[in-house]
Image (cartoon, rainbow, N blue to C red; front, side, top):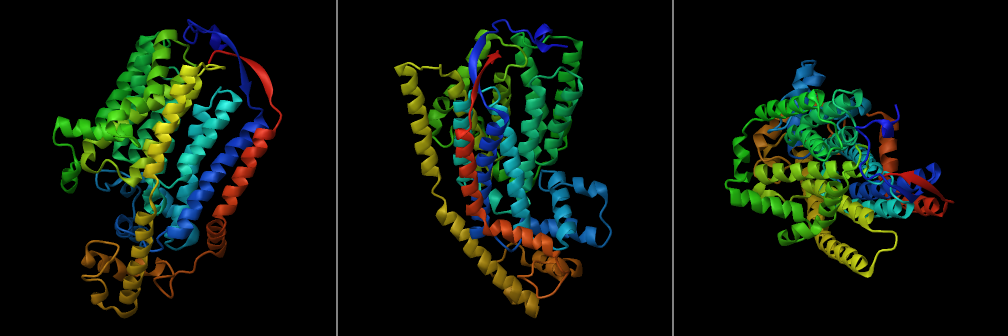
Length: 497
């Protein structure tokens, strides 16, 4: 059935506009180029600063995941067991898959694969936000996205193979919002969106809020008349709210995380503003999100049909707001951490895209001035936050010390190499227990042991090729971007936004 003939999708203010659309070759080339820039930058960061020795929580996974797998005692439901307050099912699956692929524990390989996973999530985000944009605007969003994600704000995730859960979380959240934005309750697409939203909980505990995001989108669309209210829709929203409630009830209280939580409304509000305003001062949170606020106002004014691409941006904005809520509550005292910035960057992309969507073909001086002021302020804030060298370099220096101490213990069995020395885990006795397990000793990275399970050469050579060619991949990405921009383009007439 034609969507425009369906009253649910009918726009109250549908208009026909002339818009530049990317030919398939050109759009794919520009998108691939920008993603290669990001991937190359991440690979270069890993090659320069990536830790070769497992760190902190990775040792827990060695004892709780790798050892049971290797001695044949691992059960499927063990993959859902708690890690702090999270159930990192998909991250564990990936770790086991890589262990089985290479036959050895390889943190750099985990980092390279995680970088590819992150770039995949960024690619999905780019396709979502540039849907039906003019060519110039879509290219601007693509290069802006490449610029902000190529800077290693989220270096903790990039240099810690264990953190792939963050990237799975982004990917599932983006796909859930995209599919739900235009689907009717209980349709196959709606069910897929709800399943993906629920799956995000099995990466980070804040994923429990993702079904609630979809429910909030539906309510917004019903209020504006874009979605037809009915028992199926209300039943669908009730199911999504129930999923959220059930998942929240299964999030345990972790005593050692209590110090990070918000203990007052004032602390929660302060942390929320700090997260929402990043990279600006909390006082400028509204300024940063002004483009999305204006886009929301346009939705209220025009009440567009369900397939209007602005609903995707609005849904992602609701999703982002839920991330701020979760962090402000659960991590109020450490809300600005490198590992969270990959989420915050989504806010920059959304607002930059909204800014371009709201600008007319020939913007007046006032509009151009305000848009330039927003971009300048955001760029200055982002540039200030990009001074990361001391922290990243310290990570690499610490890894070298950890490696030497672990090698000393493994070679001699002298506990003095661990006790009271810099090691990649706070409990020396616990770490000794892991290192002494024969199953773990056999799969340790070769930099720690002289013998063990031999790795598959094609896996190692592929990993090493990527690690050696990060800058080359970024340069290829730049060439692809400009090639895509130079491809002939055509003007088409598109209905709606």
